Amino acid sequence: MAQSLLLTFAVAIFVGSALKDFFNAFITNLVMPFLVVLFPGGKGMGDFVLELGPIKLKVGDALAAGGTLVVALFVAAMAMPWLKEYSPVQGGRR
Image (cartoon, one colour):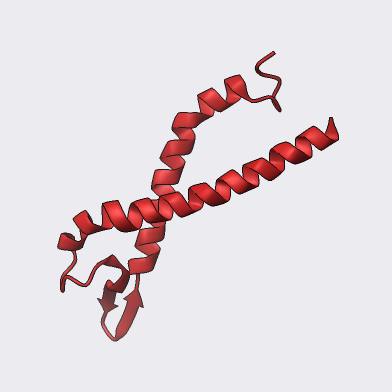
């Protein structure tokens, strides 16, 4: 039983890593080109700087990471009912 759980967690870590790469590519290549028109200078979101007087905050990468997080949380929320029903770890699929 413990070996099965260990294998399940190893697969989950591997799939999570692959999903991280997918969501980063999705946001960078499919979402950001549409959002670039909202930012002045046409340089893209990664170079977006918020100026508050003498302070310059580079917030572009944080906004991109936030977009990735929102997409990932949405997909997780949509997949959670299915995962609870069919997960062998939680006692489903008997």
